[in-house]
Length: 139
Image: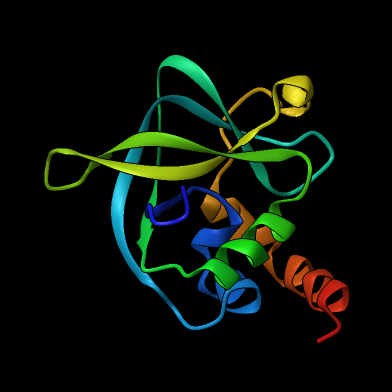
């Protein structure tokens, strides 16, 4: 699975978070994960995604990731998520094979109702999230 682009839909859409985890910005394109929904993880400021017929998640398709970057992303996402193969719809039309992180089936109950908002995360939680992440990474 390692050569495929990665579809991101949550905190990794923020360049500041991406830079701490992966490093320099990567090439991105607007894309949608169809028949999935993004909801807030209960008690947290970040989202999780689950299959849901008729829903769709707007995010970004990131290309050009190497093995070490993927390994850092796997650690960042942790045991709540699993990296899976998906097809995403592209802004210009068509589909692309990709990978994304979905919430593990056994943890589905942790995905709350409603839609997680990137704008609300940026406005209300990003600064504290980055500070906590820097502490976890020792930076």
